[in-house]
Image (cartoon, rainbow, N blue to C red; front, side, top):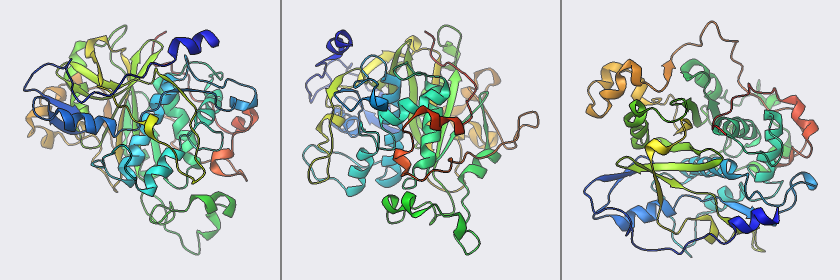
Amino acid sequence: MESVLSKYENQITIFTDYLEEYPDTDELVWILGKQHLLKTEKSKLLSDISARLWFTYRRKFSPIGGTGPSSDAGWGCMLRCGQMMLAQALICRHLGRDWSWEKQKEQPKEYQRILQCFLDRKDCCYSIHQMAQMGVGEGKSIGEWFGPNTVAQVLKKLALFDEWNSLAVYVSMDNTVVIEDIKKMCRVLPLSADTAGDRPPDSLTASNQSKGTSAYCSAWKPLLLIVPLRLGINQINPVYVDAFKECFKMPQSLGALGGKPNNAYYFIGFLGDELIFLDPHTTQAFVDTEENGTVNDQTFHCLQSPQRMNILNLDPSVALVVFHSKKNPTLIRLYCKRKELRQQRNYQEILKENLRMFELVQKHPSHWPPFVPPAKPEVTTTGAEFIDSTEQLEEFDLEEDFEILSV
């Protein structure tokens, strides 16, 4: 373990105001649905990227499961990418896509609360502890490397205990997104005398109340849509390149999870044929809340030039991610109503049958098992403390084993 830690120690590079290694070009850079002109908007581009929460390897946190590892260096990169993706969804939910972060500037209370969801403690809802132990139910031992689909399944289950954010996390199967199933997950019955008995116990709700964000005040849950894909056999098929890049242009885009074998990255945009990503392969010390209840967030933002890789070097197993906060969202306009899409020049090529990355259908396929919206097990602890041992994972069904990134 010490050799692993030393390998990843102190890899943080110093922030620069310039993207000197980027070409002097008139091309647009797309970052999670927003465009930047590289030649004239370098500072805006850096500001947009640095506003994304950046989660990396950490060391010296409390041992996972009480006796497990106290660092995720060397194995937790996909878990950290999943955290980054989910954190971006929560920022969009509570602060909006245009929210910006500035060093040493006081941030909204919602920002601090989002950050605290991901601290490396077992009582934080999306901590490395919770994700690693929930991965046991997906056939992954603590300390074993995850793929995009595994981390998606883990986040789907952990979200069931998150009353504050109240997300409906839908992970597609067999390259198919089913509108009917999504509506069943997102629809919430209004609280009434008939449904009052279904309210979670006080122990679950007391610490999860926030103005305007309770699951029981809205008739529609925000949707986090994750679409695991395989876009080739041993390497990405070039026919999917243009369609893949178009996904980063959607306003609802949360990017993609993927990378190379055993090296996961969070892809947030592209320039030409190069993908821009946040890299979790930096080991930093564990950070906890301070006496005033806030978190020093300086190490949770990437203050360096964004990294890039040629899209053809991407492992073909990826997961596309989209976030919708409104009722009856227009799901992936690339694949909804063809007559509308034909009017948009940007989407002409991806309408060809052999280029479509996945299917979007209205009705649940008749040959599939019936769809049952996921529900959390009956527990008496707070949502973030429910996993103290792997025995409690037995109440979850083991998902079909689907390894995403090749080893």
